[in-house]
Length: 60
Picture 1: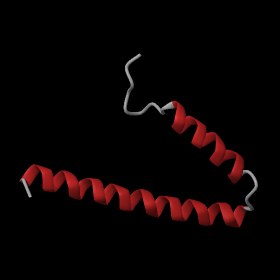
Picture 2: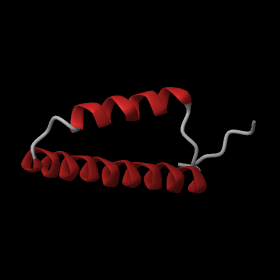
Picture 3: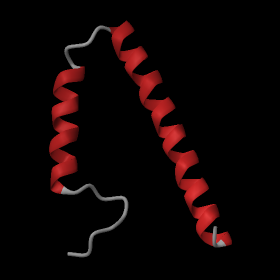
Protein backbone atom coordinates (compact mmCIF):
# COMPACT_ATOMS: atom_id res chain seq x y z
CA UNK A 1 0.00 0.00 0.00
CA UNK A 2 1.32 3.43 -0.97
CA UNK A 3 1.17 5.89 1.92
CA UNK A 4 -0.72 8.98 0.73
CA UNK A 5 0.08 12.34 2.40
CA UNK A 6 -3.53 12.73 3.55
CA UNK A 7 -3.68 9.27 5.16
CA UNK A 8 -2.84 8.87 8.81
CA UNK A 9 -0.27 6.40 10.00
CA UNK A 10 -1.29 3.80 12.56
CA UNK A 11 0.45 5.82 15.27
CA UNK A 12 -1.42 8.99 14.21
CA UNK A 13 -4.73 7.11 14.23
CA UNK A 14 -3.98 5.90 17.76
CA UNK A 15 -3.16 9.46 18.90
CA UNK A 16 -6.37 10.75 17.33
CA UNK A 17 -8.40 8.13 19.18
CA UNK A 18 -6.69 9.06 22.45
CA UNK A 19 -7.38 12.78 21.86
CA UNK A 20 -11.02 12.06 21.09
CA UNK A 21 -11.35 10.15 24.33
CA UNK A 22 -9.77 12.98 26.36
CA UNK A 23 -11.76 15.70 24.58
CA UNK A 24 -15.05 13.95 25.29
CA UNK A 25 -14.40 14.75 28.96
CA UNK A 26 -14.08 18.51 28.36
CA UNK A 27 -16.79 21.08 28.89
CA UNK A 28 -17.95 23.20 25.94
CA UNK A 29 -15.89 26.15 27.20
CA UNK A 30 -12.78 23.97 27.56
CA UNK A 31 -13.37 22.51 24.09
CA UNK A 32 -13.58 25.95 22.52
CA UNK A 33 -10.39 27.07 24.24
CA UNK A 34 -8.61 23.89 23.14
CA UNK A 35 -9.80 24.48 19.57
CA UNK A 36 -8.49 28.05 19.61
CA UNK A 37 -5.09 26.95 20.88
CA UNK A 38 -4.93 24.10 18.36
CA UNK A 39 -5.82 26.37 15.44
CA UNK A 40 -3.18 28.88 16.56
CA UNK A 41 -0.56 26.10 16.63
CA UNK A 42 -1.64 24.94 13.15
CA UNK A 43 -1.25 28.48 11.76
CA UNK A 44 2.20 28.81 13.34
CA UNK A 45 3.16 25.44 11.86
CA UNK A 46 1.94 26.61 8.43
CA UNK A 47 4.05 29.75 8.74
CA UNK A 48 7.14 27.75 9.69
CA UNK A 49 6.66 25.38 6.75
CA UNK A 50 6.25 28.32 4.36
CA UNK A 51 9.39 29.95 5.75
CA UNK A 52 11.42 26.75 5.40
CA UNK A 53 10.20 26.21 1.83
CA UNK A 54 10.97 29.81 0.96
CA UNK A 55 14.50 29.49 2.36
CA UNK A 56 15.02 26.21 0.52
CA UNK A 57 13.88 27.72 -2.78
CA UNK A 58 16.20 30.72 -2.41
CA UNK A 59 19.16 28.67 -1.18
CA UNK A 60 19.47 30.48 2.17
